[in-house]
Image 1 (spheres, rainbow, N blue to C red):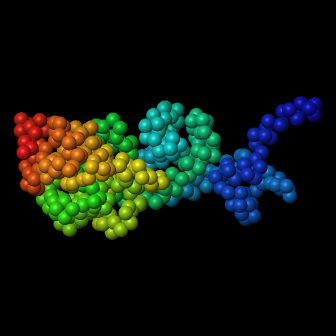
Image 2 (image 1 turned 60 degrees about the horizontal axis):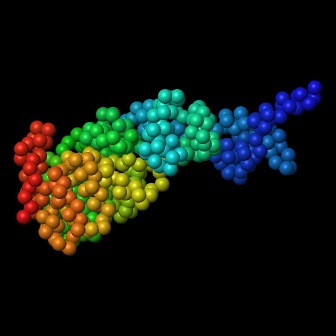
Image 3 (image 1 turned 60 degrees about the vertical axis):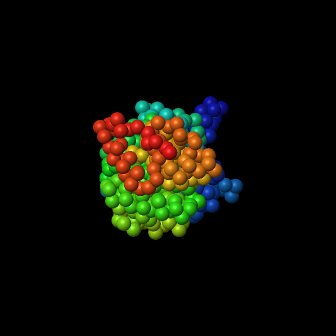
Length: 390
């Protein structure tokens, strides 16, 4: 009888009893922090001994739920301008994305599959174990990822927007692209995304002529009713954005970091001005660690939301050429400076000579005329012919 009881109880004990290190990992905290919780009476071991405490898994599960409940309370401000279901869905998506090392392709596929099994438009705590099992990862890994994402979302404020693809503020042109980000984070005026958007970009290394062209073109496009899109890097990007701020013109800044970050640091004041008078958007959640490869990714977003891209200047090795590449990929008009096309020392303009929607310009009025020509029924006017490059 005792042997039968032992065989029956052993698997239950192994499943329900946790050593101190296991209990700490289950809660996603250090053993030292667990000892502090025991000392203050917030966590009670099922058995205390000099060799180490033992804990009930069910007690740890209850403690973990309370921890998440407190954490979730700090994101309540987001519900002022965002549907709760969208906030929860975004947190759940980026938790899964982090499991797949930031891969949108893998995360989107898994998220869609999991949505058929679990309710992903509500707080995830109750399904963490089941989803971890489904994904084949340790519960502690899932727990740590979710805690990090929720902690990141706490940095967002009541005036920030979280927009899912297909929702009202999601850019229509961008939504037509199959690999468009599932979620966007916005700070400022999202109504600007319904206007005529034109991306104006250039490299970090600038010339005096390039800076003058960037400034004057941004000013004149803005005064004609276009909304300027650019990044917030050093060089031409900052000249473009400063022109819009100086003349109080609407602008959209696309970041290679979360909207809660400033990069470079010296652009913090400028970014704040853009948030107040324009729109700052990013595809990266506030929980993500900024990576160098995030910055080129924004060019896809910039090209995707814009009617056209205007290149100011670039070197042959500048990453800003990815903006032109995405313009070609998404079949958006691409305007290049005639001075670059004439410069035989530059190789990069040759990449776009045969692109059917490439147009040359010499001065800002050329760009304005070209944009006017493109403003026709479905953008298919007979005047949509390529400008002669002489």
